[in-house]
Amino acid sequence: MPDVISTGEAVTFWILGPIALLGALGMVFARNAVHSALFLVLTMLSLGALYMAQQAPFLGFVQIIVYTGAVMMLFLFVLMLVGRDSSDSVVEVLRGQRLAGLVFGIGFAVLLVGALGNALAGVPSTGLAANDAGSGGNVTGIGKLIFTQYLFAFELTSALLITAALGAMVLAYAQSTGRLGKIGQRATVEKRLRGEHARVSPLPGPGVFATANSVAVPALLPDGSIAPESLSAIIDATPVEEGESTPADAHALTGRTGKDELS
Amino acid sequence: MSPSNYLLLSALLFTIGAVGVLVRRNAIVVFMCIELMLNAVNLSLVTFARIHGALDGQVMAFFVMVVAAAEVVVGLAIIMSIFRTRRTASVDDANLLKY
Image (cartoon, rainbow over all chains, first blue to last red; front, side, top):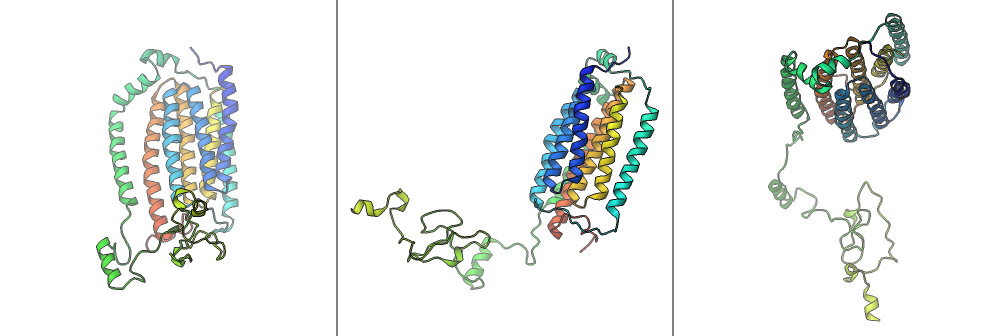
């Protein structure tokens, strides 16, 4: 029984195929790496739907769950760790490399599409309907194949996965590779008391004795002046003007001011 | 429409992935382009399984997915450790194996 492609599948293909192509092009040409990752997610999702349309429901769901769910989120995670703004340098190290790459790509595409289009023009499709009926469905059929004919390869993938997990742990392990090695708490205290640090106590936290606990608000000393060490180098501190600053008020935590109760 | 349209789509996706590997300089984006090429091959494997009426192609695609997952884990760990020592994720800056 030959495999007939239904109109619904053709419509699915002509909608999802261009979407997958657009996602791939967007991934290559997006300036921002996060946008690239999201475009790739789009491509992978439409490929998963195409797998389902092609009588491979198991692979379709694995594609969506494992690829777009796990692998691409891992990519996004690493992008956030590495820094979102690590965009591409515009400098070409090899002159004309981008142009050569594009020309190569166009040539490769013409070659592949031309050859495939010629060779596969009249290829009949058998379809998996008979196979699925004989083995009791797509998932059952794949399971039977994996655990009989491809059992050894399947065992090898388990070894591969364990090796990959170990390798990732070894490579990503953050060793304490300072120049002096890692300094413990006790050693830090001793160094502080020996006077090797600028001050004995830690820096004042932001918002101490202040009326807000935001990091942007500098700490106020008991006399109402600003503690200069509490100003973060990264965040612009909210300016506290001398005239405006009210003296520290014990009622500030309750939300009322002391003046109301006095009057 | 015949199933070979899927193969043409797969060829185009593979080409876009290859061009991305050649053109982009950010190591993570290069890695994503490799993933795209693997996905394109998976699509053609699924299509071959359908044309031949046997599930072996789908099993191959399944194995490709497993290997790709392992590859992503190790590759991203390598990129992380390079970034930790060099503070960059550009493939042009990692031009020495040591120091």
